[in-house]
Length: 150
Image 1 (cartoon, one colour):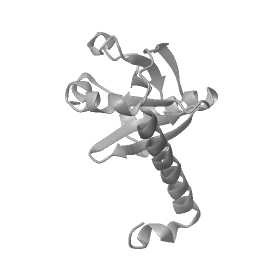
Image 2 (tube, helix red, strand yellow):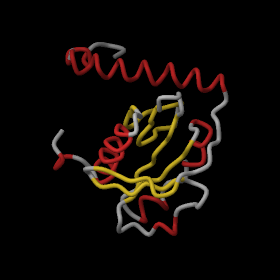
Image 3 (cartoon, helix red, strand yellow):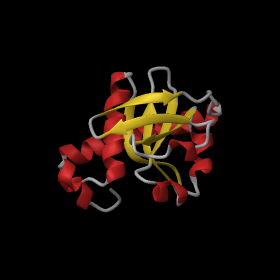
Image 4 (tube, helix red, strand yellow):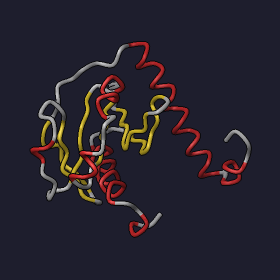
């Protein structure tokens, strides 16, 4: 997909994923850790640490997000990613802050660690791995997407 086809939040997610890759985190965009939850970026670190990053492109985008607190139990650290024009004083101070653009990002505020429960971490790791493998398989075999159950 070309940059012209991406929405503003997707462009921020791309910059975040590039930055986190440099920090040895592997990312999945638009990942569903549980039914009814879809996070913009789920990142898995080298020590099996999960970070969730929600990308907000405007004040309206942020104020309309009413589900974000339900994501906290699915990550060790929770971040907002915004561009430099975003009014960052709107963001809860206990959460992380990443300034991003389509080409990169920088962690500005690191939140405290709130460890994911061990059983949930194992289930989340399995779901992350299966999702990543399924996406790779779909890229290598485009006909997979047309098969029932794929």
